[in-house]
Image (cartoon, rainbow, N blue to C red; front, side, top):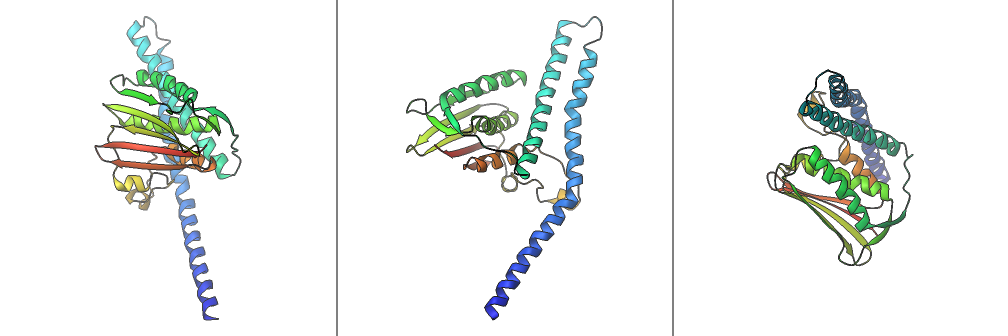
Length: 254
């Protein structure tokens, strides 16, 4: 009887903790949306502003190039934010499905390489060396959702490019024992401290800002990547230290 009561008390305590956590997140959500709306308005204002400047008469070629560059850069940023927000909403409501298909790893990395080369030029980071290593044992065909795998790897690479000022970014893919495929993105960027690593996948990171209900959004990319990896039955591992760079690895079943 005492054992049964102890189990009920433990369960009650667990439910109370879950309720408390849910209430806290509900109270923070409007503040989070306010921070996110600020992040969305920033690139949107840039698009509207620089689009207006394009109508000015007597623009010289350098001004035209700069305005076009800012519009393209802000458009990409806005599209990424909105896409992540939509995907997160779909996953939270169970409406995002994974469609497995035959994926050629070498061809997938070639597609990502082309887009990252364009972004590297767009963001003025030509000094950063980017290398892509495909599996040694041939092309490496796997069964997974190509669109979602591309999306996760792109999130990792966007972060590496954003936080790396010099050095290199390496993408290494391997087929392990014919059972697992791994993708590792290594950079020589600024790295992350332990508190940042521990809260990297949290919608509402714990800390002083949370206590004061003042939330500064850092984007939804890593949270979306984690949830997509889980849906693909994969795992994400991260190793990082300040000033020494970051290695993010995604492992999926073949």
